[in-house]
Image (tube, rainbow, N blue to C red; front, side, top):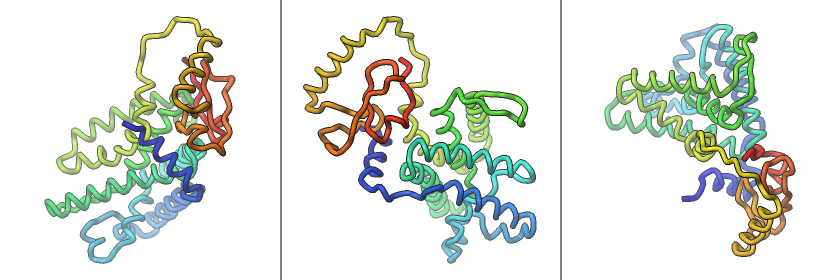
Length: 276
């Protein structure tokens, strides 16, 4: 089975103008606007939440405004705005504008489809928000940068992966606590995280350490032999593109990665270094 992330990267490579530059800047600005509206006129906020019945009556703006509902209230909302802007902008730099745009809105689309399916089947009007969309974004960040440290409450240094484990535990408890079919909404919203980061998440699982010493010359001969059999000379270790499929691309080998790994011009300076 092909890696969905690789297919998305190839689609975005063929459509370089696809995507919204600085998407999180617009999302954060919308969050701040909603936060101010909620402080000035809380009644107006009720017209911005997601509601299948209201959307079917013509209030189509709810298809977008529900994503901008602040994840929390008070001063904590401002902290959340900054935090999600930071991780979202980092993901956009890591993946590119196109893949990040797809990632952000794919979770939203899955949630919308599920909410409408529940409404048509049972008549239940699910009031969804963008909370789980932002959580999926945070989990993706934690998979890519598990050992990055942040200051919890601006005082306590803690690694991202520990915060992710805590959020994952709270996520499971919330799914078990909520009644059906509301409890499946977080799971549906997180499917895009598994599509994007499932392979990377699998590579983070504990493995038996390889204590053998790498023979660089032998490894290079093996790579050249595989390349000759595969009818290409270079293959990017991130997106999988080859010089046969994309002859206009330039390929380089990273001296900071352990082993013999090749990258295309888009990923030679934009990848996570191999450590084993």
